Length: 208
Image (tube, rainbow, N blue to C red; front, top):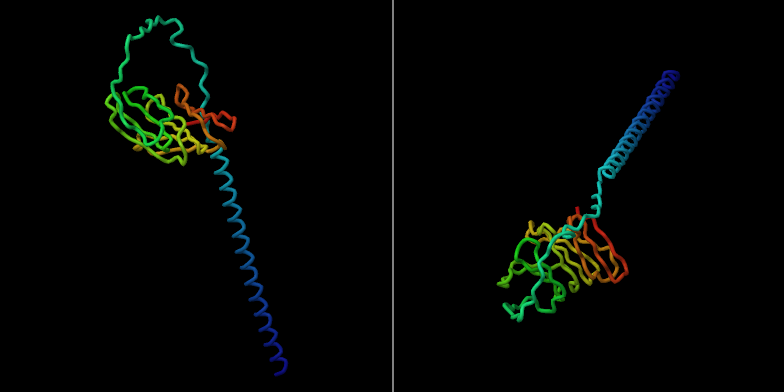
């Protein structure tokens, strides 16, 4: 009887030990699977980042173009004997700092110390649209060569691009200058924007 009891106790201990070992093995397997999944996820993320970097293509800077007016015959400008004011209208609550004419339509854009830009039909002076978003006075304004975008510069150290296809919404802000941005101008293709600043830097931005 004593031998039977000892045998049963030994069997019970062996079963408990086997159960513990099985539990530990399952835990180790789960951890290994988790680490493998983490490694796979990290590898996938790394591959995605590499692919994104490879797919990022910068716009080729335009080559120097020939002056189309080099051999053109241009009529001599005749100065009028008198110039008279045809229209005057109140555009802003503070001083106007810069103006720009639309490349294709009779539209005038104005930038002001009141931190806003506005569009006007010329010569009637009818208000068409305006925008605000700069936190300080505006210093420069320029239409895109296609006329679908507008660039502004400001004393807040930024330049912004506004899209007329999106109701004049601000679609991009460039903040790399650390002082007043004096002006912003598109190049002749409209693919790049140049800005100049009091921080003694000139920067060119890839608009595309």
